[in-house]
Every structure is written in structure tokens, then in C-alpha cells.
Length: 226
Image 1 (cartoon, rainbow, N blue to C red):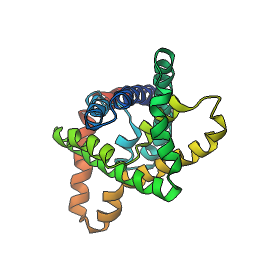
Image 2: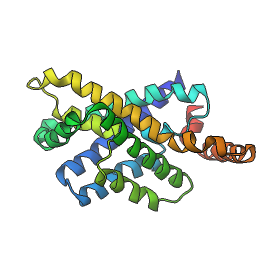
Image 3: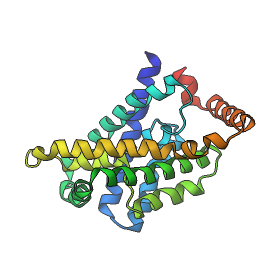
């Protein structure tokens, strides 16, 4: 129970961070905003928070796999809380309208493909960050944004800033496009394993497992959750 509460609180905080980063991009929808968005992921990595796109590519057992659901829910609630706060004091609904319309105009397969691109970049960037190499993280975020890839947690924030009683009729379409983006992100986060796993030797797999144990052993939030 304590571990679950930690996951939820950590993932909720991660959602808040992505909401703040999303607001920075809404205010500056260009390369500057894309770079500023990197603050969200840098914060998540620094505090070792639970972000769906930062953990979906690193599970090694069933327990970690099933933990992705509370992580995802916590991220959503964090983004929703950030969106509600910003909507109270500024007009963010009009700022996110263009992004949301673009998502809704993309077909399901397109959302999956664009989600895969984002997931692959995020897992790669986080892997570098886990090895104390943060430059790829600074490049990775602007790259996925400028490529037009879809980040399910950032999209949750954009959708939350946009949805209102006036467009509630489109909520079902929003959920479908968001859900397939989540699926695309998951595939992208695990793309390196899907494509390369059969080529890895047992020695390579042992090294990966040892590296993960070393990371977890030095992760204060992991110790706390235990």
C-alpha cells in the first residue's frame, strides 16, 4: 500500500511538471517553447519521478508492468490539476485549441505512429540521463516536438485545458485519440527491445539487468517506496 501511494504521489507530481512544461510551450509554440518544455522532463529525471513515457520502456517483470497503470493515472490527474489551475487565472483554452484540433484530425494509425516516435525518443533520452548524460535529454524533447510526435502525457494536459461544456460532445473522440497515443508511446518506449532483443546475448542481458539494479540501488525514491 505504501509503495502504491508513493507511485501515485510521484506520478501526480510528474504530471504537474509536464503541465508546467506544456504551458511554456503553449505560450511559445516554436523552437523556444520546445526547448523550454525540456524543463518538465529534466525535473522528472532529477527528482526520479514516475512518468509513463519515462518508465514504460524499463519494466523487467509483471509487477513493474502493472505499475504502469497507476503511473499513467497519476500523470493524468497531475496534468488535469495543472490545467484547472492555469484555466482559473489565464486563457489557456484558446492556446491549446490548435494542438487539439491537429490531434483530432489525425487518424488512429497516424496517432499510433506519431506516438511511437515520441516513445522511442523519450526512452532513449531517459536512458542517457540514467547514465548521467543529460545532453541527449536536452535534444530529445525539442526533437520530438519539432517532429510533431505525440506525447500522451503532454496531450493529456492539452486536452484538459481545451475540454469544456461547449465541446464535451467530442470527448469520446478525444479519449480514443489519446488512448491510441498511449499505446503508440508504449510501443515506441520498447522499440529498442522489440527490434534488438533477439540479437542480445545472455551476457548483454545480464549486463542490462545489473545496470538496472545499480540504478535502482542508487535511487532514493526507489528505496523509499520499498
